[in-house]
Image (cartoon, rainbow, N blue to C red):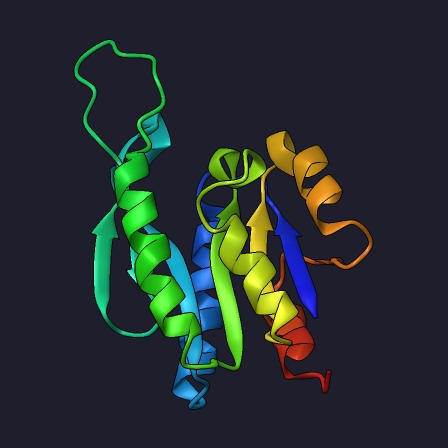
Length: 166
């Protein structure tokens, strides 16, 4: 099982949706691996800090960097993302019931970030849930081939997909 949700018009909407799904499943006792993104600060202007909350309970990792006033570059801290992926790899070794990856983004489109872990989980029969932005849909489609199922941006529908027998 490989499910994905496409980004909504609301900035951070998929982040909040996946976090809600993860919280609900964790409250039901599910063993989870992966990470959900938590944004803090002035996100409406794009000036927010990005953190990944690790779903195995081992902490939070900052994945954004402050570039300074007027900077236009990507604020993703790739070292932080790779640290998070390394820690999720350890949790994946515990055979969780589900891997949740906050997004299949630029790093994953280029073969880095969580992409190897997604492939590893699927190969081990562990279901995967992720978000996909419009900008990376083509790369995601090439990676996922016909294995992925598009899910509506609705917590109840996603939870039903997660709970469905494989």
